[in-house]
Image (cartoon, rainbow, N blue to C red; front, top):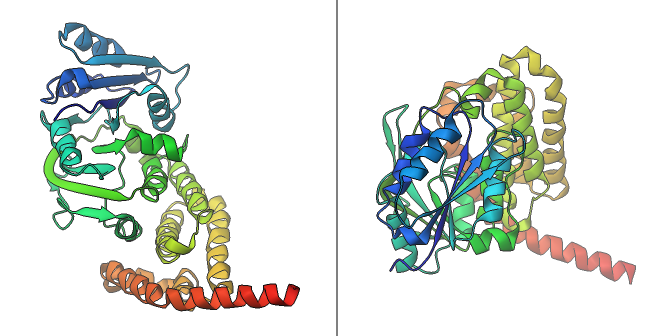
Length: 359
């Protein structure tokens, strides 16, 4: 059944070589065109991208609705997506980068999953990475409905893609939870996915390849590789965002995720001496993690956090340890989660004692 509408949100910036292919892939969708609205957000590029986009739209003679939003100035990917969300009217949202393109049956495949499983709030397709000539399909997740607990565990252990694109998302979930992209950073999808996934009750990954990921040398993510400060500052912002949401139900995962991110950040800073001024901010977050886990009596996590300090940090330099790091984090996660109920009982008992004392 094709009675649910979809809003495809496409930020447009410096993509004149790709934009026509992108819009053509949207126009070629097999899903009912009257149930699709395509929202283009012009982010004030200096090339002919938006002009070429408008030409494609003018040549289209179908029922698909197109909306054009013009940013007042160059705002970046996050703000452009947020602006697209504000005007979207579809039951579902789908983010598409303007240098990528989707398969003809992309929306139909994703929507079929929601028709067969109405309880599913987020459906992610598999994709082809043209830069590495790889097909990215998480076969162990394909066609399985995953609940919130499993989804968050996979996110923290980096076993589920956190890219916003190639994902069909219930618009009501976005609006109800007031989820938005953090502006003026790169890797914005990480924090946004965290905020999204924590609200999701049911998630599905389908095996079908629905998107081709293109590497645009003029894209923000490509240019940021030349700007280590932007890269590092963005990850610091992400860490601070995560550090403000250490909840009981996600305690183990979020601490492990932050430790892993800090270890990588320290590597990047050491390789780029111009970013040494940012090290103090990273170390401040590191110290807060250790203090938190110790004060909360999460001794397994506290012990694991010591890897961020000398001399233990040297272990991270060993190839054998790096190769098996994911297995190590999985073991720490499971062990810490096993003792979590004991900690909860201890915490409740301590709170009761304190309240009795005050009384």
